[in-house]
Image 1 (cartoon, rainbow, N blue to C red):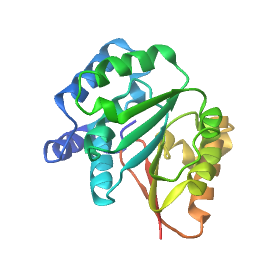
Image 2: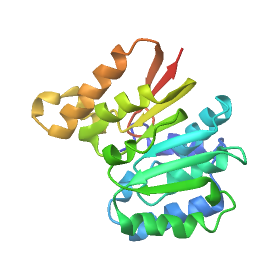
Image 3: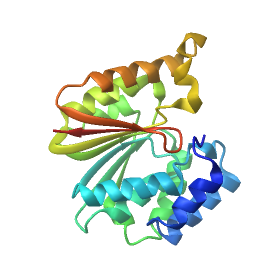
Length: 212
């Protein structure tokens, strides 16, 4: 869902740095051929991620939720030559599609795929990372946030997607489990000590948390 009117977002995108033609081709293919294409982050959010990576001098990224690989490629394009995106997903079909596009890009070599559930994958990720991008199963958002806080580098940044959830966060009493999970995550993020936070109405909500 776009919170911002489409014509305004289009204008913003036209004045922003956006991912490559390879990434754009992947985005268009996904929209035309893959179920659930609304899960794509889109060019506006990709531009914001690129800006944050550049601003924060990010070198290492962990992404929960690969889908067809658009966001991983967009972030890899923003990283330095020795940077790495570790992206996690359980869907073999969509991640195979992702790899076919990453292989077309000189930045694809920066991407490492883990084909496991997010919680299983965290057991083998024991380092410290500059950026954690959370965009996977909503019911585990709070668990992913806990892991991210523990494994974030001293100046690290956490970005969480879909944190407005089509506006459903305003009415969690509806009893939707995913909505309840996102609301719980947002409250946990809001209360985290040692972080500066901002929840932005970009796309379907981007929650940014920066270690102080």
